[in-house]
Length: 153
Image 1: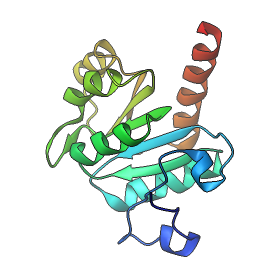
Image 2 (image 1 turned 120 degrees about the vertical axis):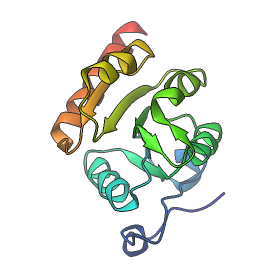
Image 3 (image 1 turned 135 degrees about the vertical axis):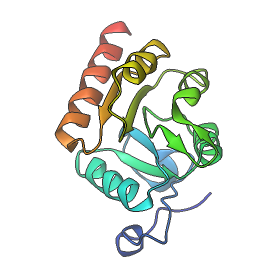
Image 4 (image 1 turned 90 degrees about the vertical axis):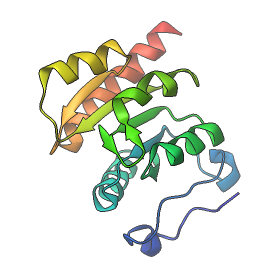
């Protein structure tokens, strides 16, 4: 298991976010856990920091292979997924990710295509946001999905 990075290292674009397998391993209270899958490290690191300010723990992945490893180690509450990644299409990964268990999947992409948005929702994504989306927009989607999950339980 890897320990969380100290804050100064966490903000370094050369360092990917790695968190322990579970929140108790690091003494972290049960906070929602998000995995951000984007090959733009600066964007994913910034988003991870913003989500942490909103009460999440966050990890980043630059490829679908890294995302699979993150999900296998600890199923996230939220998966924020870019459309185009070096080793595949985020859209194709939505169903695979959801097969690991319940989670909120948000497509966050630079492609503003209504057909893609409809396809993402059809495949199980909770939302399709176009970059640059604000943290408030993303948080609203995540909050709505968490509330729906609580009501369903």
